[in-house]
Length: 325
Image (cartoon, rainbow, N blue to C red; front, side, top):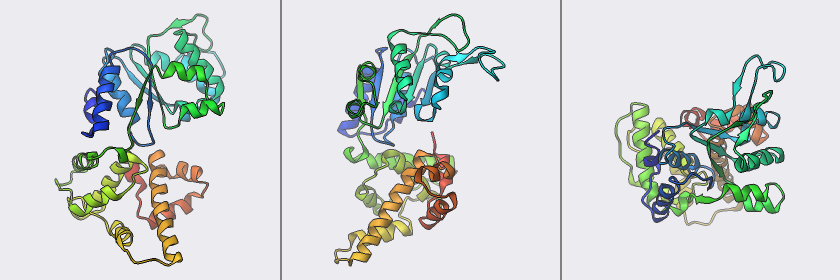
């Protein structure tokens, strides 16, 4: 984890500026708000902030706020004493105690319900808490980092996020540029992921072929770096070559895209739907780390129906699980 800063791969102007701000912000023990689209690498930036800071020898504790049941949030943060409630057969440390002396990373902070936002605001203002069932308050020494792929200012205007909490969280704000704004970085990232996948699955060292390179630059990458990583992994695992080259389905789509002949409505609609399906399914699997049951629930589809769609587009859910962070 000490190498986290090196994982911020990129030589584009926007990434170099981000690295400079990360190195600067890491030295000050204040909250930092990390903003960026899905898949841009918000947790990597949070880890870089931690391991470049004076707290580097302390714990780094990430928590996905969207995965915390509302009824258990206080218990998750504060922990509890034995007998605090039914089935509390022993003491349990909460997130604040687990991250003592280190960094607590609150991913998807925008998903916290109103009551939890009040709790977090109070913790930022007064660093003391009391475990559930405890008699005495305890102090804590934790640096809090928060991340969101939503515009928190817009959520404040909608009444879904507290303005005072936003002000406390964004004493320093770091915006991660999407992949489409990182000119030249896509080649560096693709080659890095090629090496990572080759080492993980004991594949031979290959090269980035020109056809694949051209396709990489044409794609919009709505899932950003995470989507690119999964695409590289899937392509290498399904290819007979160690080189990164387009699979037949990608070649077919590229051929249609490059054809200047006018299309009939039916064909144009079919191509647009296919492109949408591919992008949607890849991003869906990315968010749920290849868990088809959870992905089907979000998509509002039966698990079998989603599995058939994945088979149709040759999307392997296992590759998304293996690359989950």
